[in-house]
Length: 271
Image 1 (cartoon, rainbow, N blue to C red):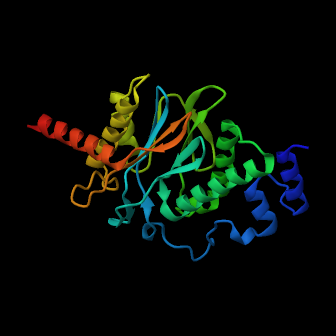
Image 2 (spheres, one colour):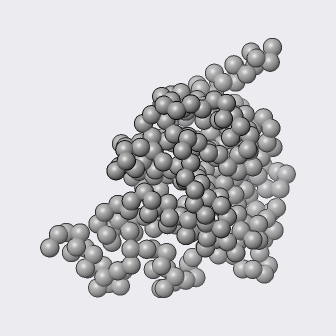
């Protein structure tokens, strides 16, 4: 018997036979699932919201990025929130919407994929991962009706097809695949308009990172909720690469240099 089968059999004896961690929680400890009561729920305007995130394909995979600002009504609630999360060895998600539910969903999804891999002894196919996330978003629909919306972008490297893939979602859990790029959040429309002008198929890694950063900066110019580079505090967008080798963080020093180059270029154009 293989070690994976032995592990699966042992876990089955312990009552952990389900490959879905969410289903396991629902059966054993439903109260641990993220939820808000329908009555007495906090007002959406009083809850921090993450704003602009994006993803674009390039020659080796997918670039994912997001600004660092969270807003609470018309105030800044955080300047350093991370909006791009590694979910497993070959995929990541970027979150936009109510910050608390977004972060909860990202962490639960990480655990869901890890649980599946431990139970089944293999990584779930990328389409299966995207469908799992769609189910979790659908579960969040009662909260979304209250204004606590979670709208992520999911990207992964498909080892079978040897390419990066991007998935977007609606509030009801509908899943749609994008061929080239996508952006969502309060500045999503502005970022998409920027990507429409700057994007081209087959971008190199540095070019793709620059295009993504420029789209975030363009969104920050027109959207009050999107934070641009904070040169005083040294805060810059967080960027991840989704590649065959795994999920890589783009060093902040590299992001800083590119943001300064883009800012200088914009300043020269104004003059």
